[in-house]
Image 1 (cartoon, rainbow, N blue to C red):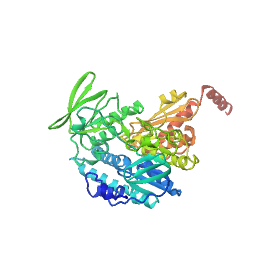
Image 2 (cartoon, one colour):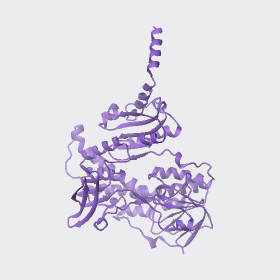
Image 3 (cartoon, rainbow, N blue to C red):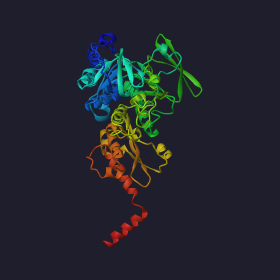
Image 4 (spheres, rainbow, N blue to C red):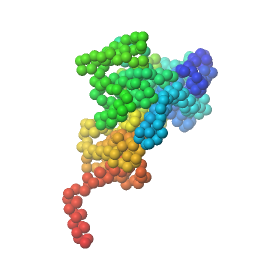
Amino acid sequence: MIRTGAEREIRVEPFDQYNRQLVANVHPAEWVNPRARERYHLVVIGAGTAGLVTASIAAGLGARVALVERHLMGGDCLNVGCVPSKGIISAARAWQTAADASRVYGGPRVSGAGNFGEVMERMRRLRAGISRVDGAARFRDLGVDVFLGEARFTGRDRAEVDGQTLRFRRAVIATGGRAAAPSIPGLASAGYLTNETIFSLTELPTHLLVLGAGPIGCEMAQAFARLGSKVTVVNREAHALPREDPDAGLIVERAMQRHGVQFIHRAAVTRVESRDGGPVLTVERDGRSEQIACDRILAAVGRTPNVEGLGLEVAGVGADAGGVTVDDRLRTSNPRIYAIGDVSSKYKFTHAADAQARLVIGNALFFGLGGGRASRLIVPWATYTSPEVAHVGLSERQATEAGHRVHTITIPLHDVDRAVLDGEEEGFFRVHLRQGTDRILGATLVAEHAGDMIGEIGVAMTAGLGLGRIGGTIHPYPTQSEVFRKAADAWSRTRLTPRAKRVLEWVFRVMR
């Protein structure tokens, strides 16, 4: 039986014109699944970034491709991740700039409350416009057989969707992940938000309490504080963004505090009670406990891979708490089946999923020709707070543990003219080099546009170019990317050893 979309209608709240447009693109109610072909070159399960890129490239090369999605095509990135979060963050930055205009730039004074409802409506409108690119109709037009429904492996070379069997030469699991559910007594009954539900809000929380100070927690905490919420962050770690350079986390934390965010570090929520005024959390820190009342809770404590209900055991695919297990060529324990993206990767980023999709095409369909090893990918990442934190490669600790002797150069942004002129001098560029060379092992950038800038370092590392080559590249003045040239100049000065200096002094004396 080929089921129609009407039997699995999906709603996204609030179900206004923009969310109706979103759903019409990424899970249309009238969709009719195609009749399965006798055998596919590739079956892709999951239509987030990893699955969409894999399916489109394979179909473009002429392969017979089936793509299966049980919920919304576009996955987390489009629906509940990168796209909506950055839409809200951009609005929050604009609000903050307007609020600072008089004090910082002598601009007009701004007073009165903003309209949170319009912020969220703008986000939904922009998301709906972007959604066509990830939509079912577009991928059908690309030559992909798009199936909306639950997929489950029924053998080592086949899966079932809505009563149809999809036989395959190769398959790719790209089912992504979801927000981890904290095991705190009373939290579920009191109710809480995750990245999957916070973008459905239409009213600004009076007091938002955020569990976790990782990237999602910090991005949303700062954005909602700028939009007018009182925000409290409860964090088990000692400082914000614990996976980043400690200096970077401290700069971001101080910026968030200036915007009104309160941090409670080295603390744990032990229980949540539901009262008439809203949730009340018991927080323990340093052997003492306190109660904090709020009206909304955002849980941002990590991710869980989506592996349930796939029939992995039947297909001979191994998995553990970290998701589907794969080798360096992204192959599972069943050589016919690969896994990419959040369901299997330690890099939980859209761009990492995209990069793995491009690898898996060569590895799965062309016997490794044109593919490659995941460990060779140079994967940058960014946290979109103000300022942003971007990183690529190894940290100093990781480089040392890998056996490298490390030379670290740090250039503060207050040494960069454009950063000073923009009023964005709080930050730094830190690059780790292999001692005695200009080979870049890793780098961290803290700047207002760090996510846009870090790609230059990623290109250098991917191409095997050293910091000296960056210094030899002419950068337009004044731009904040001049910080890279300043780091290269600092490295060049280390090459002028005392002996070399004495030789040069002798040369110049002779030249008189």
